[in-house]
Length: 456
Length: 168
Ligand SMILES: [Zn+2]
Ligand SMILES: [Zn+2]
Ligand SMILES: [Zn+2]
Ligand SMILES: [Zn+2]
Ligand SMILES: [Zn+2]
Ligand SMILES: [Zn+2]
Ligand SMILES: [Zn+2]
Image (tube, rainbow over all chains, first blue to last red; front, side, top):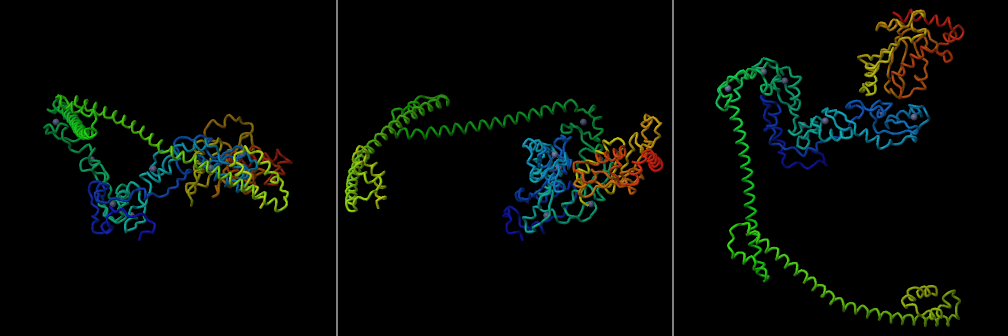
C-alpha cells in the first residue's frame, strides 16, 4: 500500500496489473535494447519526473575540479578547495568543519599556533564564497562540468546518470528501488527478463549494462567484416561497417550498382550517373525550397483573407449603431457606399475615416456628459452645504446654552460649599468671562470638562 | 574500511609527482595509509655515508644514491590529519633523538603537531634532524651522553653505523 502522504496517482497511469502480469511482453531481442523496451512502454506515462527526485548531497571534497585550483582557495587542513570557509582572528582561512575538528584537539591555529578557539572564527568574506561557488567541477555521476554551487541542483534534478526513485513507487507495485534518471521514463524496470544473448535471467534495469559489459555472449563476429562487435550495438555497427553492401549514391536516380562501403568510392568515378546525380540533387533541393516557399505564401494568403473578412464584418456591425445615434457624420459611410469603390484599399480608407469621425463625435459627447455630471453634482451639493452650515450654527447655540448652564451650576456649587479653594478653577469663571473672544467650542472642549472632573 | 580522504590521495599524488629531493614515500598497494619511506642522510652529516675527504660533487654523478639510505615506516591513523602520522626508523641509526626501536623524538610528531602539516613537511623535519642532532632533548640517553662528552667519538660511531646498516 502507498504511504498516507503520497502524491495522487497520475490518472493516465494504467492499473498496475497491466504492468505486472498479462501485458508484460517478453524481452524481445534484436534491435537495440533501449528501442525495444521503449516501445514496450510507449503506453505508459510516468508521474511528473520531479516527484522521483532524491536528495543528493554532493561531497565537495570528493569531486574532481577542472584545472588547478588557486592555492589560496585550498584549505590547509583537508587540502581541498574550501567548503563553507571561515576566517580566524589571525587571518587564516579554513573549512568550517576542518577548523572545528582541529580546535577540538588543540586550541591553537594550525598555521601559526596562536591561541584560538571557536569564538575567534567567523564566516569568510562573501568574495571568497563567490570565488569558490564559481569553481568548475565534474559531476560525480555524469562527469560533465558545472559551477560547484550548481552541482547539487544538477544531480538532484537533471543529471541523467544520477539515481532517482523508480516510477513504480506510484503504482500498486510500490517499487522502492532506484534507477538512473535517463531510465526513469520507462516505468518500473525491476522485473526479471532473459538476456537474449546468454539466456541468463536478470532485472530489465540491469540489462543494458549487462549486454554491454558483463554478458558472456555479448560479442559476436560481424557477418560482414568479421570484427568482434557488441551484439546489442549491431545495428549501430552496420551503419558504419566498412564491409556492408551499400547501393550507389545515385541509386535513387537509377544506378543499379552495389558495393562494399569501402569500395563504393571506386565506383564513383565510373558511375554513369556521376554527372546527372549531383545535378538531380541540386534540383531536388531547389524543388524542396520552392515547395516550402509556396506553403508559407499560401499560409500568408490565407491569413490575409481572414483579416479582410474580419474587417468586413466589423464594418457591417459598425454601420448599425451609427444610424441609431442619428449623427450627422454617420451618413459618411453611406455616401461612401454610393460611390463605386473599385479597390478594397479605398474602401478600407473610407471605413477608417468614418470610424475616426465617430470617435471624435463620441469624445465630444463624453465631454458634454462630463459637464452635465459636474453641474448635477454641484446642484446636489449646494443644499447639503447649506444644511451643514445651518447645523453648525445650531450647534454653536447649543454650546452657548451648555456653557451658561455649567457656569450656573458651578456658581451654585461654590455657593453651597462655601467657595472650596480649587487652585485654578476658583478664579476661572471670571477669567474665562474676560477672555470671551475665545470660541465657545474651545472653552468647552478644553477646560470645562477638566474643571468638572477636578470638581467632582 | 572507509574511503580514503581526498587529502591523503592528494598528498600521495604530490609525493609521487614532485618528490622532495633525498626523500621518497610510497604507499603499500593493499593499505594506502601505510608508506615505505626512505631518507638519504644529509650532506656533511655523519649519516651521509661517505668519507669526509671525498668531494660531494661525485654524489650526483649518477641517479643512484651511493650514500646512506635510511628506511622508515609511516602510518596515517584514521583521524589523520587531526592526529600526527606514526613514523619509525627501520634502519638502525646512532642518533641522540632516535631510540633503539627507531622511535623519533620530534616535537612536530607529538605536542606540536598541526593538521596543516603534511607527510612531506614531516619527512623534511626528520631529514633536518639527521643533519642537526639535539643531545639536549634526548630519546636515547646513552647516545646523548656520549654525544655531549665525546662528540668526535660519537660522530665516528654514527658514521660506522651508517656504513654497516644504511649502505647495503
Ligand atoms: Zn578543509
Ligand atoms: Zn592563524
Ligand atoms: Zn551529472
Ligand atoms: Zn521498480
Ligand atoms: Zn547476457
Ligand atoms: Zn562489420
Ligand atoms: Zn552508380
